[in-house]
Length: 331
Image (cartoon, rainbow, N blue to C red):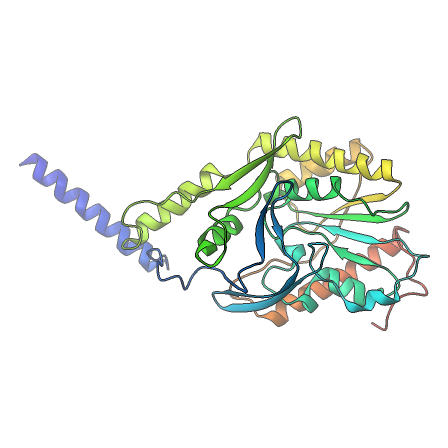
């Protein structure tokens, strides 16, 4: 009798959990494929021995829930900025942007990204968007260490987000993993750094729980578990600080300027800033919001990126990192 009561109580708790999760907007896992990212043509990514996954040159359309956008990848394997760079002058340094999906322009067209607006406002400069659509700091670390065409005086701008320290943002890896049916990749490969800044390749696998397509509660706990096992840790943030110092030192050896830009504060960002100040790494706050949100339209994202580019230019001019007195387009 006690076993029957306990079993009935367990069933009752599970039912209440399910009703509660659904009442708060959680749903069972969508297995129809409508929630996944789809890319046409499906040749945008390929496995690479240096970068894990590289972007192939071409013009692509990316479909995600609530939005679709166009992405142009240049022959260099990076996102196009703006055709205004044909006016770039050798008198001005090149400006290279590093960062995560927000700086890459996840969720928006080529002409709505921050580097695009930056190039449009400063047509005399050559602006390059080397931000990572994949994860974040580890990809930027590898990207910078393999650049061969930087010149003395060039400016490297790392737009920093602590959530991308070491492993990157789980959501983006999950999105690409779910898109595998539309990509010629068996697994989405991402990069991590160890404490000695050695690069490691990892195939992301989202661990699935049974019955996740029927239960909102099970789907919630599945996502929570995967987020937990890929969460940033104190160690990952320590590695990130070492990587940033290495990136800054690399730029100094090339005769380039390195600046870390952040646009919101949290515990780990504050710790990173203190670390930068101790090691004479230029860091600055430029407030803005360039995050992709499923509910945001193109216009709000584009406006946010344009405002952020405008704020960056004003700050860089005041810090004498760039000279825009004779160079800015009409604003």
